[in-house]
Image (cartoon, rainbow, N blue to C red; front, side, top):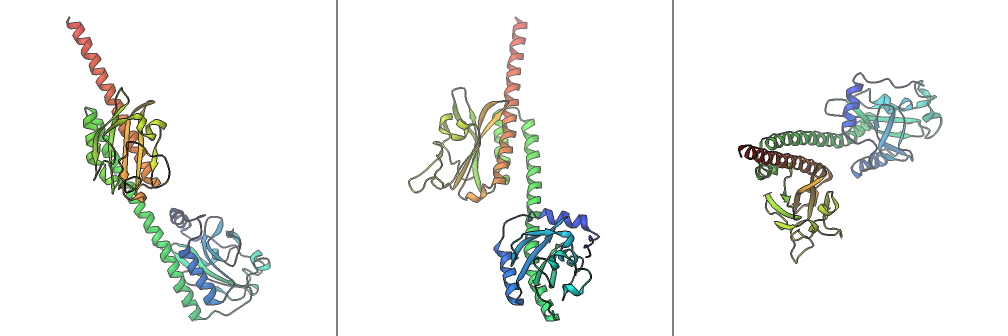
Length: 346
């Protein structure tokens, strides 16, 4: 048996593959549709979308097998990714590279293999669309062209995932720049009101399609709105701490169309559970163990408050909370300093 060698660009290839976050994900109809067509078109018992990781081949789509992966060392797809054209083995028992391969001598008893490589945008072959038979067979040029055509469809799905990943990375970079800019403004602000107003003017690009506000907490457990952005605040501007489940529980609280208890400060009307609001998010602003206020978001499209956006909102709430705590400390020190000067003047 011949173990498949590594491609010359193996490190780059693996980096691209793993950046797609596709390995070990659930089956998807867009890939299963392709393998079903391949299995029927070529009248074979097995059709796979196989991706080659460092030490295994993993099947994103699998028709005719009950396993989801095998060792890379014994994979025929490991050989197929070394080529930019279909890799065809008409009879494995007549090929010295595979005649004693455990996938040939044992289950699934591969006698025929054909695989079309699936390339990323940089040309790295990430895996194959392959078909397998348990008997030898011929594979004409026309058959190879058909397999390549189906492979291109599977490849386009991988490229779409790659573009989505690149878009996500660009979005994360843009968010990091905005967070850095916010932090600079917060450090330069002289009062809590100025800090909240600065955040309100900068925050819209971080949460497109969302409205919201920043609330501060008074000594009487009264919560007051000090800044807002977007179409509507989605909350009463003033309310008690006990009206918000996020503040009462001391952690972020998301409400949507489910039967979760509703914060009493969220505005509603008679037509729906949350009025025109599909989802809302309440995040307590806490610094040094002290609750300082509330960061609130709402939207008429619940998908806009994804887990990634909720994590981003928590980061913003932490930044604002720390800034408010620092400004409170500065005001306290200034007052103490003023009293000392007044006492010395006397």
